[in-house]
Image (cartoon, rainbow, N blue to C red; front, side):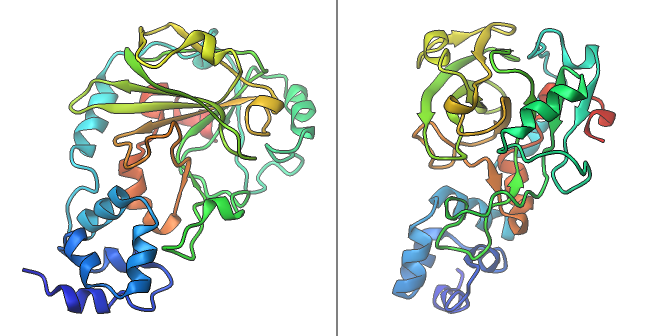
Length: 290
């Protein structure tokens, strides 16, 4: 039996409770919270409780998400339909890293990006999974449990003109169709649930207002079916038209039609199990990200 008062004492005064939790070793969340002082308990209770349990499991040497490895194996071998027509792999594309590698590229949230992207004369631009992005510096990407903001991108972005159709890569059921209205949020957002070794989920963010006419909660979708269109600036959260495509091995405690699109760099071993690489489904060759 862990010595919970001693473990709880190690959390007192810690500015980054997530990292501190990772260092505790085997522990269960409920008795740990009961042993914490009021400030630490309130900070921990203010964030996603299943995320905290995933951190504790990883810190104890287990999988942060039970079955995360089995899901990666499943996604690497399951048949998938192309999400775009023409398929990205059938023509040129350009990688769009955000750390200054392309000196004249405007930010994705700058309307000048549209003109710049059109001038590249390629049908698709690719934003990177696992990339640290400085744009996520506003308070909505922070919480009380840590001084570290969530800055590591957990999806793959595909840039193309507003109105571009998105096709379902896998069979699934519509879990949610929601408009997330905060600035720099997803705008119109679709989440599908899929069968695998355990249920898993895909998220389609920054979509157009046509979404609600294409999908309703409980609908079954088939591979290749048009499920959404790229949204324009006024309907997609305030971004250049693109799809944010993300895979989730668990929805954690997020049940309102939204999900974290970026994670903490210091928790990447956990977040990368919660949200594995979407290229397991997109299946673009490595050169598309360079």
